Length: 73
Figure 1: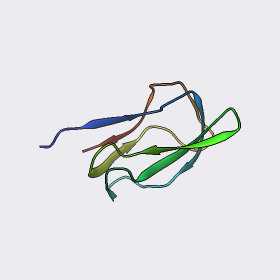
Figure 2: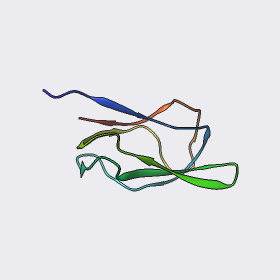
Figure 3: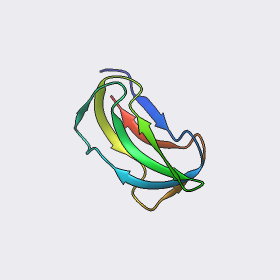
């Protein structure tokens, strides 16, 4: 079984979009979600190639900096 990587929010903010689904293959640098902080949108990107194992945040959720928002396997 492969390593599981947590994808963390780079800042406190509100999740605007979730651009992937569980089970989807993603590439390093691919946008997984969009977060809004201080009226600006910032991408949350895959840190490595992998498969989305879990989505831990949904549009409208407010997350803290460093909070896990997804897991890649």
